[in-house]
Image 1 (cartoon, rainbow, N blue to C red):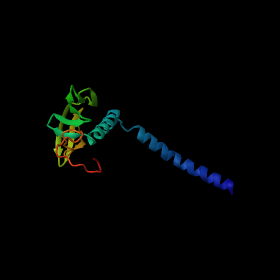
Image 2 (tube, rainbow, N blue to C red):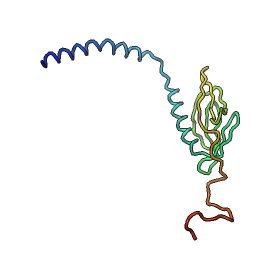
Image 3 (spheres, rainbow, N blue to C red):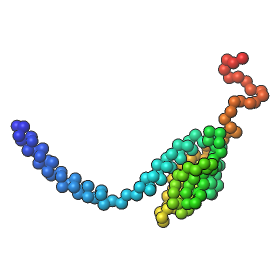
Length: 147
C-alpha cells in the first residue's frame, strides 16, 4: 500500500513540474523596476511622518508642516523630493513634481521617465496647533485634582 502511495505522489510531482517550470519562466521574463519599489518605501516613510505632523499647508511646489516643534518644507530640489532643513531624499530623478488636494487628501503627483504617478501622502485637515507646550493661558482651570 505504501508503494502505491509513493508512486502516486511521484506521478503528481512529475505532472506539476512542467507547469511550475512554465510559471518560473513567465515570472522571470517580467520587467521589474527597483526604483518603483524604493519610491514606494520612501513615500511610506513620508506618510508615517505626516501622520504626526501638524500645522500643515501647501502650495503647488511645496508642502509646509511642523513636526516635533520644528518647521519643515517638502519640495523638489535638483530633480529630487527633499525634506529640509537637513537633507532627507524621498524621490530621486523626478522630471516634474507638484502637490494637489482632492477632497481631504493631499497628493504628490510626479513624472519619472515619461511615466506619471500620483500618491496620497497626507490628510489636508491635519492638526493645527500653535505649538505643543504647557498651557500658558492665564485663566486656566485645572482638569484634575491639582492644587
